[in-house]
Length: 232
Image (tube, rainbow, N blue to C red; front, side, top):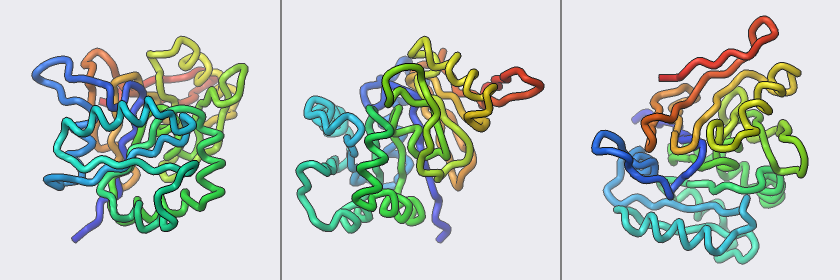
C-alpha cells in the first residue's frame, strides 16, 4: 500500500469555520475525511498560542461534534513522557495559530520537528491554521516579532513560502509582495481565510473553501513585479 504524505494548510478560520452553502464542506470535516478512518484520532497542537486554554476548549467544542477522537498535546504541562509514540498513534495532527517563531523554537527544543517528520512519512494527515499553515513550508510571512511582518524559516516539508490570512489581514498581501520583490522570500502559496490547500506528496491536490468567495494563489516574482494566479 502506497503511503500518501498529506498536509492541509489553512489560511485562517480553522476549526471555527462553517459551511456557507450546501455545496461546500467545512474545513474540519474535510480534514478528518482525509484520514480515511471512521473515527479518526486527531491531536491539536496549541503551542503557538502559548497553549491558550480557551483555544483548546474551542477545539474540543468543534471536534467533539464530529466523528473523531480529539486530544491535544501540551509542552508546558505534558501528560506523557513519550511524545513521539503519542504523536505516531494519531491519524491527524492539527496545529493552531499564534506565534510561529516561538512555536518552532519550542518544538526544536523537544525534538518535536523530528517526530512530525516521521508522522508525515507514516501518512498521518498534518495541517493547521496560520502559524499551523506556515510551519510546513520552507519559509513564510510572520507577525511573530513586533513591527513590520517579516520572513521566517520553517520546517521545509513543503517547498516555497506561505502567506496565510491573505484577505483577512490588510497588511499580509502587501508585506508578502514586498518580501518577494526584495528576494527575502521565495515564490509560494497565499491562502485566504476560510480556505485550505491540500497537498499530497508535496503537490497541490485540492483547494477547499468554507467561503466560496475566498481563494488561494500561486504568488511569485516575474520581471520585478509580483504575479498572483488562483490555484483552482
